[in-house]
Image (tube, rainbow, N blue to C red):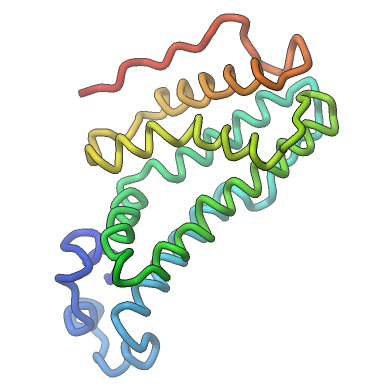
Amino acid sequence: MAERQFLSIGYESVTMESIARESGVAKQTLYSHFGSKRELFLALVTAKTEAAAKSVLSPAPRIIDAGSARSQLRDVLVAQLSAVMTSEMIALRRLVIGEMTRSPELARALYEHGPRQAVNSLAAVVAEMNELGVVRIEHVHQAATHLNWLVMGEPVNRAMLIGDSGIPSPPEIEAQVDAALDVFFNAFGTMEDTGGASSAPTRIPRHRS
């Protein structure tokens, strides 16, 4: 109930009374679990970002076969981008950014349980590829951060600023990941065939208007 209200009418318009009324619980009960609306929203942000991360990162992705490294990494990146590219997650990000000046702890919670955890997990995957000799990278975490933004940067910006019509379709998500992997393996790859790499550059389909 709280999530629906926050995402549909915005943080400022929601009250503990309106949440309690729609949830069918006493306002005092709500306050006993969450000391304030801000604490309730923080719990919601943390729970949503943790759930999205768990859907992708639990169990932790592993690269165990050098020959199929690209396809394994592709699966991880498609899952990560798909988890972020939902109406609910984009709306939540907008709310958190809107409250950043008043409540920086909300943005920190989203960052720690979302982007930071995703990059750390991706860095572990890239490190395994490094050990297998699939890539040759000196600064693994930096390379993982760059790969993350090759995948996430344009889709996240578009969806954040345009709205639901800017959320890519599943084929567009896959094409975005493939194009990012082309750049990544062209820069760092050491093998002719990394499990799905193509000699032809990936074309990202034009986003529907």
